[in-house]
Image (cartoon, rainbow, N blue to C red):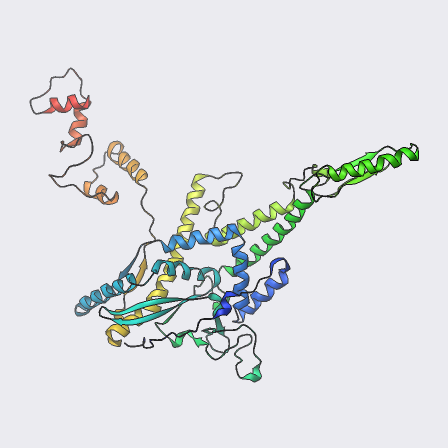
Length: 478
């Protein structure tokens, strides 16, 4: 079975994945910076916990990312045979590719795991463990186990840094214990290096720029904007609680007998309490005083305090815009702004999004090809056939716009008088060419020369019909 030899589970089930860190209202810019710094040194557990908390509470960021990943995961996939100049190996490459296609197709819930692995584009790394079994059909995946991204850390003492899977616990270990690795990471009994188990542990480690792997992933960019949005939302909630309802203010006239004032004040205070002010405070003041609520939501912004003129809304919108730009390189494909947008600009940004989808799919394809199919080929057919390992391919091509194609055909045929091959039209529109005895749709089903029919329809009605069958065609057209 080649390199895939261990029948039992490599990783124990770590319960601590169920209890990640949470910060809530205690989150600060300093905490974000601290955990980003830790991740850069290879220890990613708290950093991934932070990203998880932020993205699960940010509807916009979560939606844009999920749209990207599910888009790629739902694309059709295929297996391409290795190219070879040796004619004797061509058939073997075809056989290997066909068996690889059957193997991948039999992986339980494959598309679900594809969608999960693609989140490595955000977290920087994602992983799965494959449980193999030798069946009558060959070497097949019996089960796929989820590896939480928080368990993927990097040994900073190695060059290049080696990824390892943490098997439990998240506290640091002192160097004197013998478990210390690198500047920040720890390695315990039960932890495993991913590259020690080829074909068993598959890590998707995308590269967005020219930097070390622990510094990769969109999370390095988005964590700041998601945190800023959280701060703005938190302050806006306080603002809404304070200015969302009007303040009941009762002013009473001074300069009267003290007895009258003593009788009126309790009534005014009772009125403030019973007016239905909710949790908002009220006040009873003499007419010699003046109450002014300065700042947003106060008297200079209207008594309702709608928040439309506050900086909170502007900051939240700016954070959403920056998230959209980082994920899909534009905003028109993920947001509808108050000013709308030009359709041509939206189409160009849609093309940019297609490029992002293509880049993500290409890196994922390489990951599956090198991390799964190559090792399966060696284990199933022998090391001598490793160079014929097939390629995993995601089809990200966008379908043709049939309306645009129809308009193009109309211009080419009727205005430019071009001769358009029927075969090209059938293939472009993905319509099978009918056989001679097959029933077809359309007004000219029985006419083998549609152009001749159209021409007869343009002739004068009083022109005598010929005896070649044009009379019937003309009547039907009229």
